[in-house]
Amino acid sequence: MFLGERQSASFLWHAAGAAVVPAIALLQGCSDLALPSEEAPASGADPSYNKLTANYLKNTFKDRASYDAFEISASRWVHSIKGWTWMTCIRFQDQGHPRTYVLFIKDRNILDSRYAVQTDACSTQTYVPFDAMGPTRAGVLGPLY
Image (cartoon, rainbow, N blue to C red; front, side, top):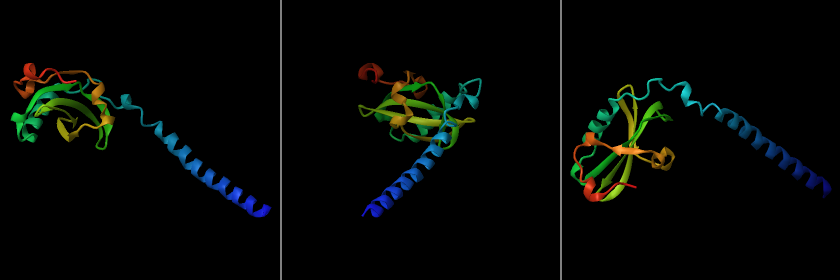
């Protein structure tokens, strides 16, 4: 019986080692991900991106009359599925419900857009009224939180 237990222990030891080695290799590769400043353009986001964003939203949101109180965050240099891009968050009211949308922009092109997810960190951003979207009823609805 002692030999069987010893073989089981040996198997478990080797199995654990086989799982640890790839995990260490994976973690070593992760250190390369947190270097956005190396590729970030020195001049920051193009100021015309706000107008590009407004035009895109006006063409994408079909029932614009139901949307109101648009606010926009500053653009951030992020690594997305499309590579390094500028990401901006837009908050607005959709029939009285708060929504947040993100756009990924590079070289004056919208590469991707979607409703925000938690990892976008839009809730941590500072927003200003997005006047390029036109007049709103923000005074009636109040600010978004």
